[in-house]
Image (cartoon, rainbow, N blue to C red; front, top):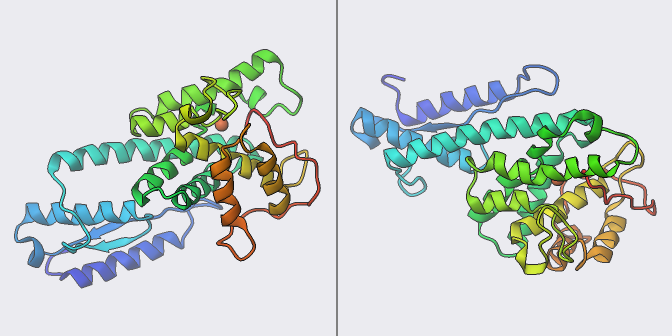
Length: 297
Ligand SMILES: [Fe+2]
């Protein structure tokens, strides 16, 4: 934007961001835009200008996206060209993975936005357990794509209304392992291990590796709880979602066997009356039979 000072560019980017956000492409399909802004007063030359604006862009993407960030040396760290190229590549892979994960969720009308809810809740549980913002963000990313391996499971099995036979169940179980392979290039090895382990159980009866207790990566244990919570509290074809109190009772019952007890305690504090709440959950019918421990959730 020739001749435009930073504040003018910021205002223009902000207008563009709002216009784009508020005009869905189609029903339920909208775009968000993040932007980084800097001017030559700060940068001095063209190459530095691009680098600093890019740093501001990464800050915007890293802090929730759908944001315009004005470069300031106090908030935005300057990054090297190599670092920028690496981040850009990871970001592109991650965007593609997210799209794939959303497509997987959308195959089943009852699991739409499941991964987003799991990611958000997992992040909040992690923060309640004392994780740093950065690590909790990494868990959020892993949560968004935790079920991406279901891309390898045929619809006939994934959406089968009847009970699964052993061979079909084995195919479903492969999604954790396959998902970890798919995300390996976009996420860190630790985050990939969270995806791989999101169906492990503290009692060792989970899959794919049958790990028990502390051998299960902590992020995987948190994802497992967030996943179970979402499966319990959202409506499914065969039952209404459970109310928070009933779901919490079920989590307590499964603490130590299927679910990590420490994370269940953190969740209790999050959803306690007067607490910060467990996010947007569908109100359910109290007292319904659980039936949430499904291999596919
Ligand atoms: Fe899963």
